[in-house]
Length: 333
Picture 1 (cartoon, rainbow, N blue to C red):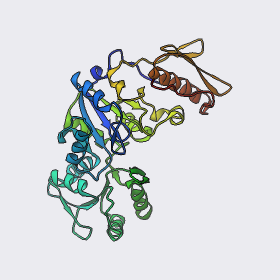
Picture 2 (tube, rainbow, N blue to C red):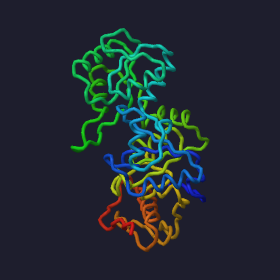
Picture 3 (cartoon, rainbow, N blue to C red):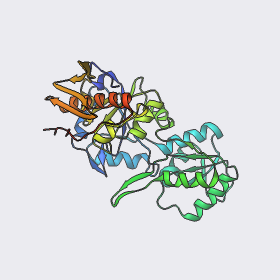
Picture 4 (cartoon, rainbow, N blue to C red):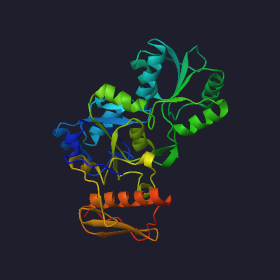
């Protein structure tokens, strides 16, 4: 169930590890209020790290984009799955190791930054690294696939099946990983969320004794935090909506829930159970005949927390998600 923080999260945690798309921006445009909320959290002493499973863009490109959106960000604040993959390869094979680079500029730059030698698919190498790269040619994928099948160790930057684009949701690197896995019978070592190397690399680079993962996806951001034994904040500005929240199984449930990044500036109180109801901030949640009912009035964030606690209790008791036909999320206004 949900956790409680009696002080604002930006004071209770010293590092926010922020997913990007759906949290700070959406398809390249800033989430309303995100820059101001992050500036306020930083003013309270919270470090900010911007982390992404996208291995295509170098950190400076990401940081520049954030600055264009009004978010203060230096290259050292950005950590990518490509950097986490490069660290895994460095730890295993050492500096100077030759690694087949099957991806975009962000992956090649990350390998070089760690002292590795990115090479082509036909070159002598000790491993292959793969990442999202829209310009990667099919013949290169075929050659790499054969080498992986024949025993060349494989590190994948991430397994995201989709990626947002200007023309809609498109296949992500996870589709390529699935194809390579199916052909080779080999499971790659994965650097990005929900695996923990990206989170470990972020803490190593940015620092922080008590980090908080902040994301909009249950199956990458929140599950990754759970696997790394870290607390997490789910914001509802991205892909997770009411239906996804109430159906969340234990392994993908966040510690805290907030409508947006303003949740970093607030204390977080979990609902309490009274007379069979979940209660918080003027809201009361119950389930009758499998249907979720929420009554009362109060802060929007408290409504979402009551919904989560009520729905998860029902899901754990019955194995079935609640019927949402009787509820509508309140507007921020």
